[in-house]
Image (tube, rainbow, N blue to C red; front, side):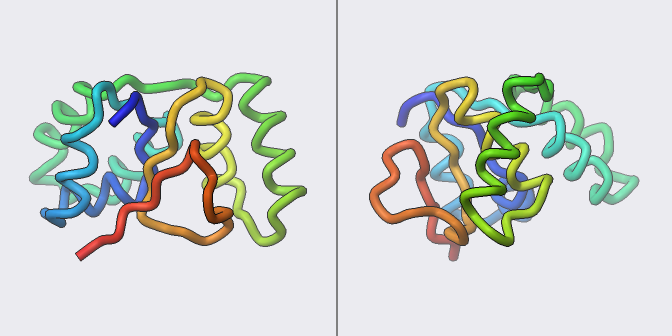
Length: 122
């Protein structure tokens, strides 16, 4: 698997022990996440798992939101009605950084998009 940006939902599935999410993420040569996903995961993390979760997230490259990413997120939202801001920012982070976007949610993804890989969860 090439270098990838991991979607928030897939990170949560990985942490919940989903085998398909684990296999997909573990198969990546290099994994990145958006600062948006980092915040979402940490906000949903049980207090007793905060340190362990933070330590695991540190093994992934964390990407900031830049002007280019915000512009790409806006373009995605205009071309895909109903796409939320957070999802658009995460997806745009993959596009702007030329990474495959690894997600468990196929909504808004066009079939055949070679820059997106939808993981079928168990």
